[in-house]
Image (tube, rainbow, N blue to C red):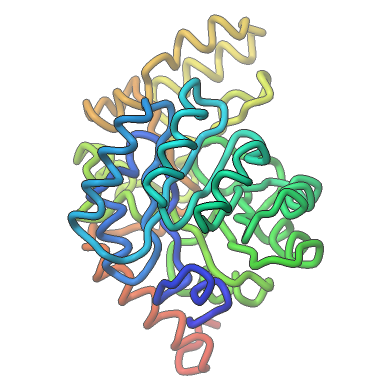
Length: 312
């Protein structure tokens, strides 16, 4: 597990927690870092001062490296990028755009920059911009997704890139991590599995829905808008897909999902909320602490890679 990525980031295990909006706050980020991985604060659409406060609170709980995910389409992206630099956060992951305009600022503070990519073309562009590593995220993941699967995307990005590649999407246990290594990845990013941990502050209804999910329980909405999103099926996804099939306007669709993620994460509304989750939800059977989960992941991966355990 002591891969090139782990050495680059100064972490024990090459396991990164996804920067999930409304989910990835300081309790979770600190717990993942304390467990030996890389915890991430999800800035999402939050104001810069909220992000600064989260950074300070994370540092109160851990002295180990952690990161901030900057959503580049956020109206606060410019200010968040500046706060990240001022606070000299060890790692930044980015999504929904190109971080090129912030690269010089972040590099001046020795911050490692890891963009999330869903295509080889974007991976090459991000490497030219100065990315230290790349997250190749397949469509099995929760939230906003691309078209390629993890199995097909990761090896192509590995072949095209000269920096460490992190596999994301469809990874929940040691089998997934071992498979990612076989595809050439230097580490993994996991989101959904970390939602069902003790330290994650989401509503218990959210965790319970993930734990009870079956293999067929995710749905992808928003394909007609060009912004597909994977969530667990409920009344909201049913209404959304019905509207899409009838050719509803973008405004109608956006109105249906307005504040839906907050409803799920904070209020526990499993009917009308947007319960973002990857396809691995069916593999999640229990809530663990981040430390327990990390120990299990490492043990499973080591057993598979050393041949001590065979799932065939």
